[in-house]
Length: 620
Image (cartoon, rainbow, N blue to C red; front, side, top):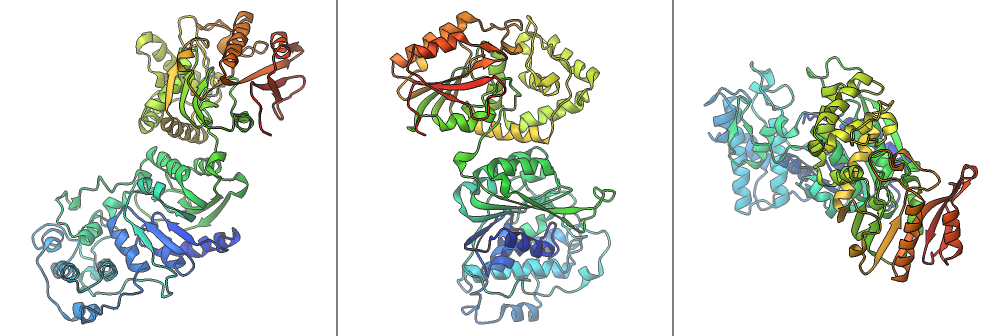
């Protein structure tokens, strides 16, 4: 069968990469998550237990036909179905005859005779199954054979989105009922085959190897192969348009939509319960190489990452005719344990702790945390990486709090579209001052109560050092910068948004001492305050928000002492020395209390000493 994206010609390269990664040594299950015509599962069925899935029903049928046809002997039928259909020249004037041939429509997908033959064969297969004359495996196999046969006499250029206006000679030949093209080797196990959106199935499937071959262009398979779907289901759907399309809303793939594809891919990789992940993709694909690599390395072990480029004949249409040479990519990564994955804030927040997350998590209490209070939440690099029943995010800077809250409440699809549309509207690019200033003026001229936090985020992306900077009127006053919104930032945004949406988060913008109502049983408080001896522009008291003074520093230590008296565990990040300065207040507080101090590994640059303080014993 002619099929877009079919991997028949790449099977050897896939096997070679698997061999190099030693995936044939002891691995038992192979999940072909976008099975298409089932060619990949068919190739590996003698070496693994195959699990296969596709959202299109005709693909489900073809995969069943190729993987589970080993017991199709038609013993109850009493005849050879191939002899029967090829010697019985009956036709039925059914749905295909009436709607996809010139008999009663203007559509020229099939000759009248072949359309009638399709109706007769499909109805006969259904009757045999309902009467118990064929098994379920035989039922899918025969429908698969019909789909294979149909492809030989279809009056189309390759896909079924439209028909040819003149008859192709092959379309005028009589339909011959032929077997499904498949590997003759015996399946090692009966295959598990599903017909579901992968995003809904991925949480319920686990195994050794996950192979992904998603759609990579805006061509929807549900549209391009709508007629095969109708023949496979034979459900008399409501059809419309010149091509007689069925409603494809339910079976449309997010992987064929820019923005949606990246979100769906990140979700699948994050949720995959497989040790090894293989991905086939194209140089013409919606997702970029950089984005794919960033996602795989976030959830996989970076040292195992591999990418193979293969020159490949391009599917030609009006969109691809003028494009440079086409390449197929094979990606591989070994997945991490879920507890090893860390997430980074989409805000380039000064003082963010992403690089120290592993060290911080290693010094957390061993018992489960019920309520985690991120007292100086900032860019939320710490809180987003914590597993707790509830997380309280608090930051005195209301603008920062609104930004972090936006990432949770805003639909990620809509947010990505807003960002890309705003970039396009204002023609933003790194270092383009006039374009950036036009956006900044639009934000600042809007009344404070109506300013769109999404627009502020775009300003931050293209601002100098991606700082969050305001004047006393809370107007953005950051100049243009050398960076912008790229594929790595897109990956960071999507993974962060998904993660924070899965957390139970309360958002506050209170003074740090005003959170006692959230201190409950099993509460843990993490403090990453402004560093008294290394103040940044966001907390210097000159940007419309309260600064950090000696009074604030002493008040914080009194607050932490009070937490300790109430038996509440806390962790404090701070700097003891920096550029010849010593935080003597912190130094004195440490000497008068029996708290534990740890130096950040690799964080002592010159005389800068970053420390971690806890009021509990840390298991080493």
